[in-house]
Image 1 (cartoon, rainbow, N blue to C red):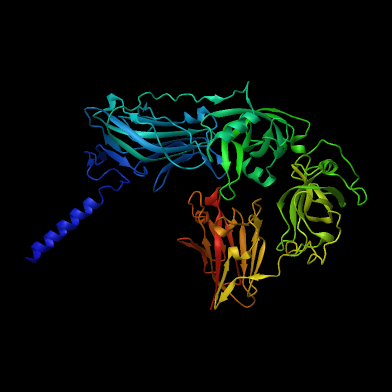
Image 2: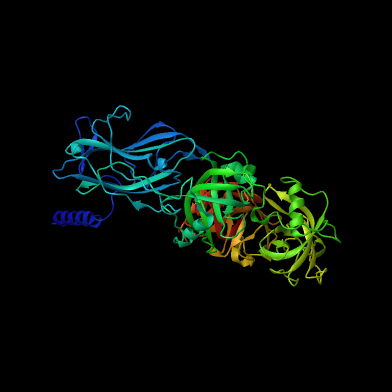
Length: 639
């Protein structure tokens, strides 16, 4: 009787197991569809499904291999800022195409970084009935897979067309293969998943890749204003499926030397007349005919260009700000100009730069440009103007502000006041008068033609002389600027100490959205010191996620209070609200000394056992996945 009950129990469990898994997608070919041929090789019957293609075989003729993950397969010739000429195949297991009606193939895919129609033609799906392990020796037939570039700048997958297997390959043992190619000049990235091969009809048989229409042409490009209007009509985050030819005059070059050295491309604005009206940003653009620029000075404000790329409506996930862009682009035509983009020259220059006769912004621009790229003036100069825009108002933590000035308060002929102290070279403090757009100011200090792109006052080497006629800051401006604590820093301490656990909640710093974070003093005397590590994006606090963001190369040095040793430091990482990405740099983080452990949202530097630890973001990618965003930091002291 016991044996009978036990047998019934096993039968019930088995039945439950199979029925409960019935709707779960299979990561490999479905169980029961696999056979073994006389040579011991697996042969799969229809229907065949593979969620990630990690039961397929990589065959690389040259260059970079297909990458097989848990949820998709990826091909790209681009890695570590180098593009390698590549031919790589991803070959399926043997599949028996038994059918009296027909066989169809469906899949999901995403293709990004296309630069022309020729790029799309380098993504192929093929079939062979005589493959023996050598892709070059087999006979292949191209199937009617239609490679389609993503319509957004995201990695969201989309369904391919339905592909019909030609009748001559029915009722045979065949293999399928994805073939990816790229040159050394440019590589797309191709991801595929959820490959389904089953009986069916009505799929596409023609393998030709239809040419994509273009907006405008090299000989007859559209204006920047037309591009601006087309981009406005797109949905947020959308880009045109067509490539566009756009002509314009460069308003301003944005790229700095560090990013240029890393990527070899340049960000810049163009418009019809070189002013900021209806300007469009050319994002990460390459040089003529897709070649890399040789130097960031290859283009300049005032140059006339024709740009080829996708029109894209970029939306900042944190602020919601929209930027019209041309993405995945390169120059088709470049006609050097005489300057004058973005109002950085032109207009009437006035003044001699002295206290009694300050430069106006036009004269300041001209003088600063005459110094040459990255050259700093030997003497202090005085500049008078009206605040036209503000990037950072004064705040008590850093004591400085960054803003633009012009002759009349417009955005024409602006000069940048960067990292400027308050009156008498002092750090601004709470209670001091704040600046606003429209204020009349006189500023004094060293000027620099930053990276040959931006004429500006040198960071923390300038100060406010007059604000709406006022030449003193009331009760004073705090500590003398120019020291090593970022303009006086803040004497306030933060965090809570509970026994051996010291906790800082990022939002408790109570600083403005987008503010750079350099140093924080904690309640027991411990300190956090942040460093950009050469990345122009230094650590900053953002309201979105109420987190401090550390970009690639950024670091934070956690130094214990006197006489204490750190056991561990935990960062509570936040999630990007748009993509849902957990921002822990995908684990590309180092601790010196110590080791990194990730558990859920917590990224922890363990085994420190020292007075300080340096935590560094070592990610080599971009976007939210490359960042460490933490809403809380918890320091645990050793016994």
